[in-house]
Image 1 (cartoon, rainbow, N blue to C red):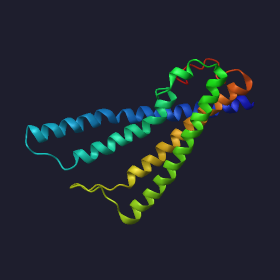
Image 2: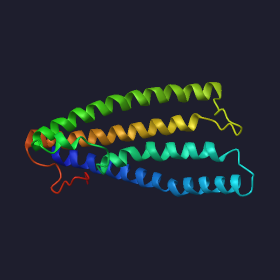
Image 3: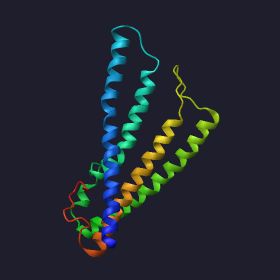
Image 4: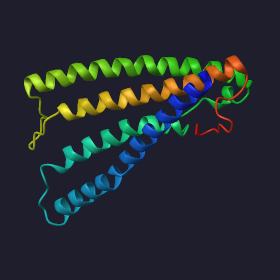
Amino acid sequence: MFKKGLKLFCSVVDKIVMYLGKGASFLMPVLAFIVVFEVVARYIFDAPTIWAYDLSLFLFGYIAALGGAYAQQKRAHINVDILYLTVSPKVKDIFNLISYSLGIYFLIIIFYVSVGKYEEAIEFDYQRQSEWAPVMWHFWVMLCIASSVFTIQLVRDMITNLYHLVTGEDLFEKETEDGC
């Protein structure tokens, strides 16, 4: 029963992170189009836009932040392999738990700072200091969502590592390196 509950939680987190990560990936062609549009407008038609730079900054931030949890799920983040690959699976679990704990600590800080920045942005109507001057509140909302989802993904990973460390068996029968 307990194992079923853990597996259900992990599966739900996997789906949420996968959909959010893949959804964020659909912003990449939009970002590429905006950059190409700006280059053509600026250098071919000598008519630069006032919005393309700001919008491309926001989109890049969205892609990077919202894709972070998905990259963690796919084990695409950098690892210190020289040490990690030479130790036993139990020691790898301990290394992972330490790394995930530090990650969660910093993500919680990012979340609380983002909440504060969001409140400031709403209260003082913060806008980007550019000619277009778009509002900033949406960026802080996105960082709250991204840090929350990344934290949940790390909690999911901690659960699988703790389960392996305590029981000696994988939580999922065919747990692969990509976490799915």
